[in-house]
Each structure stands twice: as C-alpha cells, then as structure tokens.
Image (tube, rainbow, N blue to C red; front, top):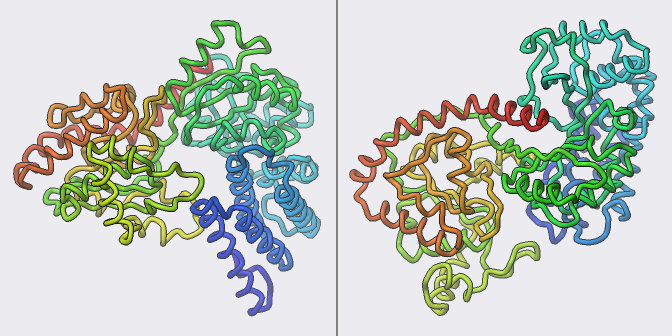
Length: 562
C-alpha cells in the first residue's frame, strides 16, 4: 500500500518511513502515558506529512484507524478535561476532515474501489451521498454498508426485497437474530459473535434494526466525554436511533467497568445528545458483577429516564478465533511460565517471592517494568505494602527490590511485541506456543487482585486455555468460578483451588502462592506425573474454547430478549 504514496522513489521511501513512525508512536504512547501529549503531537505531525503525498484508500483506512485508537486512548488518560476541549482533539478533527476531503476528491476522480467502507469514519454525513450511490451497486462487503442500505429501505429509496436478496446473495456475517427481530451488527462489532443469513431460518420475514457497536476502553472516563462518543456515530445511524430503528451498543467487554453512581447520568446525557431514548442503549461490561449492581439500582427506581440493557459479555474468549496450534508439552524444561507487564502490587509480590525462593532458574518469567520511579499512572510499590503481601519484613523486601531493580526489565515476550511494532495491542491476541509447551504450569497474574466485587478474566487466562496449560490464577475472588460458569473445567484436586473463594486479597494471594511452592518443591518427574492426570481437562478446555462463541451469542440473545 505504501508504494502508492507517490511516483517519486525518494518521497515513497519517506512516506513509508512516516507510516512506520505513526505505528511506532501509537505503540510508544500506550507504553509511555506520561509523555502522551508529545506522542500525539508526533503522530499528528506525521499524518500531516503523509497528506502531502498521493494516498490510496488502504492508507487512509490505516491512518483513520490510528487516529480513532489514539483519540480513544487519550480520552481515558485525561483525568478531568474533556478530550473534545483540547487542541489535540481539534487537530485530530482537522486531520480527519482533510482525509475525508481526499476521499471525496478521489471518488470524483473514480479512484475509490469501495467508498461505502468509509461510512464509519464520517460522522458528519459529508461522505454519505457518495456512499449511498455506491452502496446500491453489487459487491459491498462491510457491515456499515448493509446498515446504510437498510436506512435507504427505511427512506423508501431501496425496496426491502432488494435489501433481503442482497444479504442472502453476498452473505455478510453481520446478522444477530432475536425472537422477533434481526439486528444488523456494525461499527466495532466482533462479527464472530454474529451469524449470517444461511444460519437464520426464514430471515426474510423478520423486522430489522441496526446495532451500532462502539468499543469504550476505560468507560468511566470515555462515557463522560459525550462529544467524543457522539462523534464516532455516523449521521445516518443517529437518525435511525432517533427513529427507534437502531440500538447503540457500548462495549466494555475487553476492559474493566464498574457500576458507579454517575454511570446512569452519563448514559442519560449521552442519549440526550443523540436525541434517542435510554432504552435504545445496550451496555456490555466484562465485569460479571456489574449487572448485579445495576439490577439493584433499577429495582430501587433509579432508571427514571428509561432503562438501558446491561449484558455481561467477555469477548476475550474470542481469542479462539485467532488461535495458534497448540499441544501439551510432554517433557517441558521449566516448571512455570509467568508473564507480567504492568508492575502492579500482586505481580511485584509474586515476582519477588519467586526471586526470594530461588525459582527463577525453573521458570520462564517476565517483569516488563521497573519497581522504582514508576510512571504516574501506576501506583507506587511501597515496601511496607509489599511486606504485607509477601509476609516478609520491610527490610527484607527493600533488599530484594534493590537486588532486582538493576536487572529490570526482564523481557520474555519480545517475540509478541518486537515483531509487531505499531500493531498496538496485537500481543494481546497472540501467544507463543513454544513457551507454553516448554512449561509445566502457567501462573496467571490477572489485571486485578483486590477485595472489590469485580469478577472477570482477561486474555491472560484465556491464553492458558488456548495453549493447553494448567494454571493458577492470581486474580479476584471467583475468577475460577466464572470460568466454570462458561463451561470450562479447572484443576482440582491436583491444585487446591479453595484460594479462589477467599475474599481478602492478601490471604488469597498467600493461598495461591502456597500452591506454587508445593509444585515447585516436587521433583520434575513427580510434578509431570501429577500433571498427566489433567490432560483430559486441558483437551476439554481447548476444544470448548473453540466453540465458546456460540455460548456468547446465546448470552447476548438472552440478555436482549429478557
């Protein structure tokens, strides 16, 4: 795609360098949030430089997605001021406008292959007339084009039978069937959660509506930035929402979300800005405890302006759709595998425990940060608090920290990161099968290990299922119970899993670490002999993961129909 930047070899090489620079800056921004403004400025400078060259639509899609990602990232990094009030956001809007101008120019020159693919990037409707002309032509491929075609049916521009036959003949997998209607999933929707016309009996007879799906990382911050959220919704979708012909899905299914006092106020304000009912909004938290708290709020009469649907949905389980081949390592050389990215308290305590107890030579372990002089967004690792977690004296903890600090970071997952520079977050959806096969057990340090009501698991746990590793989870109470609710099996009695039921986080940590110490004390032959009794469970979990998407579809359907 970069070869089309310009006909000049020198400028083409410069353009390729700029695109690589943008990608690297996106990854850098995620790892260095304390210099985020400087990073965003660098990205915007590079986009302005790229705009000097000839662009094809692949390059424009690439840049728009990068701008989308970094605008969203910035919105939850800013603690108080709205993203939309910053000069950085205004600069981003200007760049998006210039990109849309280039698309309109290219369309006038007949250089766009599929203009309908840009509907989702144009919230002001400037691209809509062009997209309407193209969407009625055969060969559309994106779910947004299906939604626009539906809008044209609603306006009487396109016959409904034409719409149905188009879906039937071209098979876009964007249909989510309910008892009395079919939702057309578009936006950020994971289409692996949807079906297709071939899977739906008599779909032609059902009424349709649009499900516009938006991912909201760090929803506590993003939901309050109403102009940013509204700006991500195309103009024709807003019209459908106002008519009651669409629903807005706000997905926190990949990130943490807590029910808090002003969540409902944020949803109500967002609905007011769009001009739709609160009942048109569906919220998808990953935290299984969110729905319980919300149901209590509704029961007390808190949802006076209409009640959005709240459906717990963990899309990390869709890791199965990006799986790598995996097999159980019969003769691993290491007892444990343990990844640690951000240096949270429970991860630091586990790492220091393993150093103290002489386990590192028997492990693959990473610790991708420092323990001192941490970035402002990570809580300080206080020796006094670590001493409580580790059951050591504060002096002993300080000595261990001083011992390991000069050697940090411990890099283990470089293959995941270095080979995907700029593909921010791509390591989340990958695992190195060789590491998993060469380790007998996987120690999962989840994103939280506290005393709150949060109940979830992330890709960290799912990788163990995908890679056929037995694991011990350092996470919140009920994490293993949540896995079993999804149909997975865990590893009792080989591992004493009563730690999962302990409410106090420090006591839960100690109980889980006691299992690590027990396994580490076993000779490798004995440890592997015990592990062989788990093979049937490992194969079951791997097989079940490959089919769990159907379970997620059912959960989503049941929640929408209730």
